[in-house]
Length: 136
Ligand code: SF4
Ligand code: SF4
Ligand SMILES: [Zn+2]
Image (cartoon, rainbow, N blue to C red):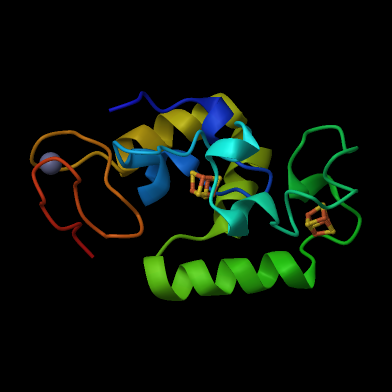
């Protein structure tokens, strides 16, 4: 399992370290900041990653944008909150308030499997190593 670090946090607030595409062993995605050749099509063509504003703002995160949170980000956040119990907007607020390093540290603790310590998969709602389900 790869260690969690700041390069895994996408501009939208997604922690790519929790993604099933990042955690799989075959054709592993390198995360939003990684090479496009390793990503699924929907992340290569992501409207947030490709947003002109995000590519020119100071922090590299959506919270620095004048129209934050835009409709696209709100839609993504609503879908993730509903399906995966994880909020991009909450993540972004935490990064803005406490900084990226504190956020990554808190994420490592929040998403550690309570049984073996491996990072939980947010999409499957369980530990990829020992298959323990995440506690709701
Ligand atoms: S598939 Fe998308 S969300 Fe998942 S790790 Fe790759 S870039 Fe991140
Ligand atoms: S919040 Fe701003 S920077 Fe982020 S995707 Fe929307 S318009 Fe682009
Ligand atoms: Zn486990």
